[in-house]
Amino acid sequence: MKNVEMRDNYAKQQLAHHWETFDSNNPRDFIDAYLIRMKEIRQQGQHTSFSEAQLTRSIQDLFIAGTETVNTTLKWSLLFMILHPDVQTKVQAEIDAVVGPGRKPTMKDRLNMPYTEATIMECQRLGNIALFSVPRCTLEDCEVNGHFIPKGTWIFVNRWGVHASTKYWKNPRKFDPTRFIDENGQVFKPEAFIPFGVGPRSCLGENLAKMELFLFFSILLQHFRFHIAEGLPAPSVEPKAGINMCPQPYLICADPR
Image (cartoon, rainbow, N blue to C red; front, side, top):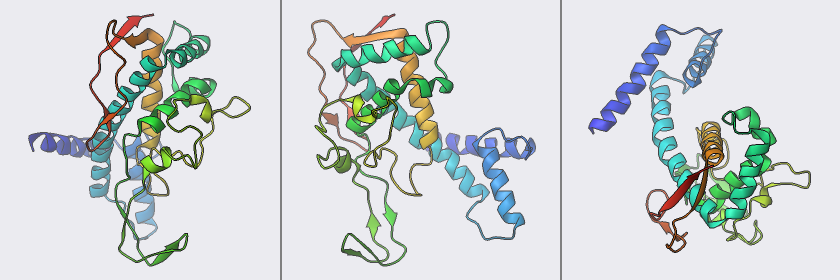
């Protein structure tokens, strides 16, 4: 509870600071963008769910949801890299060609690093850290694919079922980043790729998470070659059950490049 209180106080302090230094002509971040939109709607006299309480909750959600999920995805990513050294080599070759050793990768490099981006996406698909979406609720009676769903029904998206389905993926248990690269060598997102959920209520932090995963992953592989510790068997890819599906603890060696 002490940690929860610290988190809540931090969110409130950030909101107070942003109000004190707010400039609608110079938005600095998510909080400023939210405040601008909230003021616009209120000035139009429209009813809105935009409020300081909702903004504080969103700040908390970005910390809570983003920290654990990005951390777990990176654990899966490094595990897949030591189990698939050929993929790791290709990612590092792309990083070397686009970025080089003299600077860190930036988001501007992302468009020129399709194989790295595709590898991260495959780590998300096969790692599958969130088996189901958070619950949603139908606001009215509806019918989906011939199935009647009454108002007030809890709805979950079966992410694991979609990501592991042979209906949508060829050899879904195989780690293959090229499934996200088209004939022109560019990254594309299949409809069945839903690590952040689907629809207008998909993950609030999707864009932030994509940025974090790209930067952390590419910088790590820029500086280190990861491999299985000598004399130890290959780590298991069977997940450890929990709120998120985490890899089982494993040992890894990181050699400076």
